Length: 299
Image (cartoon, rainbow, N blue to C red; front, side, top):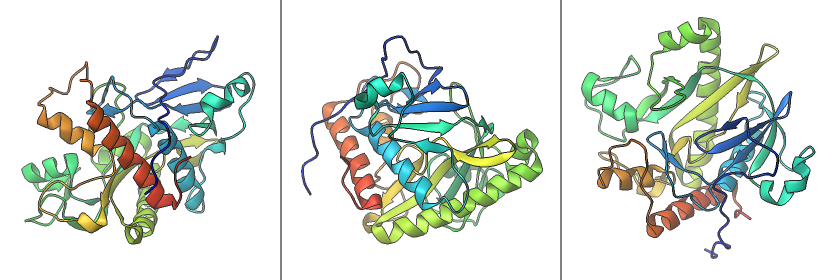
């Protein structure tokens, strides 16, 4: 495999005279009226805490991989992307900083639920299953091991926390937040997106164990927003090394989560600095996931 190019790092955007309306865990968002400019930085959050150490190239991977999936699955549901190369004034003066990591998108009204689809028992789902035999109220077969493939993918929504941890909720709870009709719609769309993405990825060597989708409404029309099947919003496992019965090697930030678990950090701010070897390995994993899924190297 060719060596990765020189590291590019953006911890946060700093444009003279311009202030983002939102600095999220990873993205800086600028309000353009009926549109938004979303800039994916190289910040990394784990256990809902933004860590002080950025991961070079991460923002580019998140943006470029999202654009890839938005285009590949555009027949399932419209998405919010308008452009990833043309930026309105005065942002056109910062094309070098924005290149590869930014999208101009339609402004929607985001739904107050995260739409998670799980094809395997892992993460918080595994923790819930061990205690209750269920995930988000869905009864599952007895005797499953960690990382087992489920008989069928399941829809397991979660709340969106402004700070702290998101919380798994039942379908009924999600319906109470957004209406039963809309909950059924996002469940159906989420399941179709997951099935299509998993079927695309697995023969290329990546298992999509689970992923999170976000949706918004624009003039009553449902749109796929935020990010699409990235290493931040998904668990990507190398298919060649899949072995249920415990945690799996991954192409995503689970590598960082595992490091933090080993060091027994209490999962509260401030987050610890990451050592160079963890940063380098995480960067390589993000870039490798991009290469495998898209068939091309990250520029």
